Length: 85
Image (cartoon, rainbow, N blue to C red):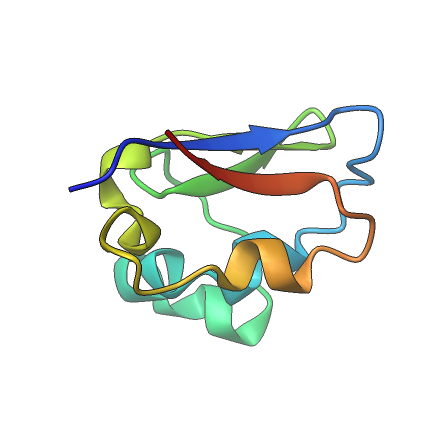
């Protein structure tokens, strides 16, 4: 398992929630995310708080095993970066 950081630049993040709604982990936990409904729980990987995307449960991220990267790909502002250490 690789060490991973999800870095979100608050200056670039517009709070659009594209990453939140596209995240397969969020969709597994709260299927309504696939329909564009923001997660109501803190038991998800990503969630918007005060208009900025936040990482809540990094341990859930599938990119740790090199299987995903969707959040970074869909961010229209380049605010979210996956950094493997």
